[in-house]
Length: 394
Image 1: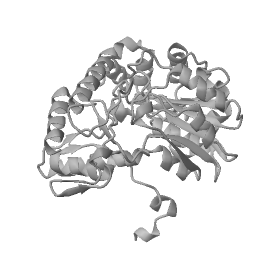
Image 2: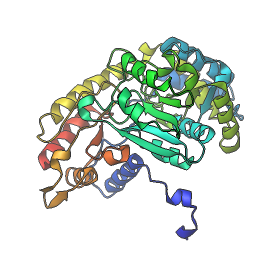
Image 3: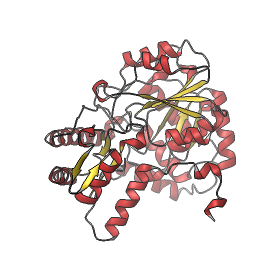
C-alpha cells in the first residue's frame, strides 16, 4: 500500500538525526550499551523557576485553545527579549509563536516560497532545511564551505550563488551542525551583498544564540538595511533545555507574520497553553539564570576537542557555539577497519555505532559528506567513555 503514498512524502528524506536516535534506541532494547551523541538535546533538567510557572499555569486553568499566533503576554515577552538581547524592535503583530522552531521554519517556507524559487543553504546546514524547502516546492542551492574557514560562507560565495530565481538564504548562527558563529563584520559582509538584491529574504535561525562562546551574538536583522529582509527564528529548546515543550517563534515583517498566522490557523492552531505560560517566565528571566548550562557546555567542548585531538585522522576546528563538533574524517575513506571498508561519512558513522556502540550523525545529512556531527550535550563521563571507545576501534 506504500505505493499509494503521495509523491511529496515518498520524495522526502527521513531526518538523519532522528533516524540515528531511533536506531540507538533499538540497539539499547536489544541490550547493547549505546552512548548517544547524535541528538541535539541538552541533558540538563528544565530550571525549577520555569517548572513552577508551568505548575501555576495548570492551577490557573490555562487549558483552552490559545490564540493562533500566541498569547499576547508571551508575544510581549518575546518582543522585550528581542530588544534586550538582539537590539531588534518587533511589534506584537510581527511575532508568531509556533509548536517549535521547526514549525516556524516550515511556516515561513510555505508562506514565502513559490515553485521553482531558489533558497541558498550554506553547507553544512541543519538537516531539515533542505527538505522543508523542497516540501514548499523550492529548490535548495548548496554553498559548500570548508573546515579551514570554520564552515562559514564568504560574501564572494554568496554573490556567486545568487541567480534571478534566488528568493531566500537560510542559515544558523551559532550553526547546527558546525558550531560556527558569524561575527558582526562577517554578517556585514554578507549584508552588503544582499542589500544589492531587494527581493531576497533571509531566514536567520538563532535558536543557539545563548550557547555562544565567542563573546556575544549578533542578529543579521540588526545590521543596517537588513531588518525588513530578515525573518528571525528562535525558540526555547536549546538554551532552556525545553526540547519537549515545543515552543518556537519568529520576528518578521508584518506581511510574513500574517501569512504564517493564516497558515498555522489551518494546520495546528495555537501552541500548547501550559508551555506558552512557562516560556513567558523563561524569557523574562535574565540570561544569567541559565549561565550555568552555557558554562558547562563550554567545558565539555574543550574536553571533547582535547580527546578527539588525540585520534589520528580527525581534522578539527574550534566551534564557537552550540554543542556540536563537526570533524572532517575523510582521512579514513578507503580504509578497512575490522573488515569494514569506509567509503564515506555514513559508513564511518555506522561503523562507530556497530563497533564502538556510539551514535553520531553522518555529515552527508547536513550537506557535508566529509564530516560527522558529534553532540556533546551529554555528561562528561559519557563523553570520555564514548571517545575512548571511538579511539579503541580506530
